[in-house]
Image (tube, rainbow, N blue to C red; front, side, top):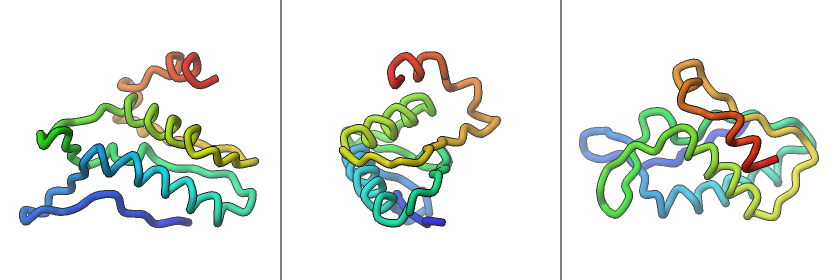
Length: 109
């Protein structure tokens, strides 16, 4: 198990992160996974798809599940880390209609 934190909390306990912080977070995430995975399969949720509020250009916005999955895959590809195990991203029931698996399969065969 790996525990990670990707957000900051404001004075009202709202979780938020800037998109300019999210991408480096994922880069570091993949480096840490590589250090400890020991050939085991990797299972993770859509990171940032819960109560996280994204800030882009200083404005709060919601980033949809599809885009978050694409960013997670994109940062893995950019990391040049090659894991020999299976990576599974869990899509919870509440988000299943917000993700186009066929589109993801076309973009990331």
